[in-house]
Amino acid sequence: MIPLMLGVLGAPVSAPIVHGDELSDAKAQRARILQQIAEQKAAIATLNVLQTGLSADIRQTNTELRAINADLKATRARIVALQRRIALVTDAYEGLVAQLGILDAQLVRVEAEEHAKRTDLFERQTLLAERIRSAYDTDRTSLLESFLSGGTFTDLLAEMSYFIDVGEQDKALAAKIAKDQETLAALHQTVEETRLTTNELRKETAAQKRELDRSLVELKEAQARLKKLERETARQLAEQKRAYAELVRNKANVKRAIALAAQRQRELAAKIDRLVEEAGRRGNIPSIYNGKLKWPLIGRISGEYGCSTYPGYAPGNGCENYHNGIDIVAREGAGAKIRAAGDGVVGFIGWNWADGPDPAWIVIIVHSSGLRTWYAHMQPESPKGVYAGASVKKGQVIGYEGSTGNSTGAHLHWMVELNGSYMNPRLFL
Image (cartoon, rainbow, N blue to C red):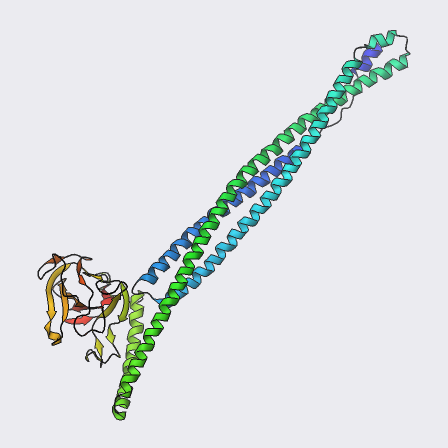
């Protein structure tokens, strides 16, 4: 019977197979979440680039609106384009928020899976402990004692089979617990990584929202400034039209008709000149003089160079009323600092008696043998070191805005003389 018992004890018994599906699923789930997190980080990086360029463009637009030569039509088109870009950035931000919500939901689901797996693991560990205690208590009576106690051979075989089955089941349960521990570790790692990363993404997304809000505020400021400039331009145009209408009514009918016909011709020529000049300012028409000078005063242009409807200007250069320079009104008013448009030597400073009994205080700077700049209607005072024959640098203060001579208000009349002829100062900027 002993060999028979040994044969039974040594016979192979099929143990339950433990699958690693839950562990594989947990690892695959972690890989998917990490991929989503990487995509979220890439989207935030892309949005950051868009935000940076957007803020820079809005600041540039605000700067141009403060300049004295602001092109309102082009600026309006730029603001419309900025509004479209703001909409794209907003959509991208909302996509980030939605994706963050998805990650939060996945975190909740993985935390629930971790809790469930922890509960399963505890139950299996408790069961295994109970089975081990039971086997220990049962093992106090050996198989030989059971055999010698007088039981039948059939009873002995049944009891031995029970011990063998219990051992294989315990090993299978222990293997399952080991797999559960691996799965729980993978789920816990996913939870910790997802929680940490989603918190970081939430902070970065909030920073993007703050940057977007700042851009919206700056864009609204640009829009408000543009509307203000458009209203001011429309008001000035209306005043000029009223002044012209009043001037026309004071003339005789025949002269008025002749002047009106001539004026229409001049307006057409002036319109063409303005179109060409505007194209030149935008860089569509090259000039060999561009970049030589800078604006001597920051403010609003109250009078452009060329043909004008203002009757106080003398005829010249093919115009009945010819304005030989640009009038600039400083934002801060009379007394604003006027600066040299370029390096040179002060050729003259004092009263311009050529104007008649009511002369203007002027400064003339000689930049080369053929290039001079004139600054008229200034206050009759000179900064220290500015006198006839003194050398000055571009940007150096040479005087202060005033209203001397034949002037309707404080402003600077700026002229550029090239080889004896007055030119449009914009060609030299």
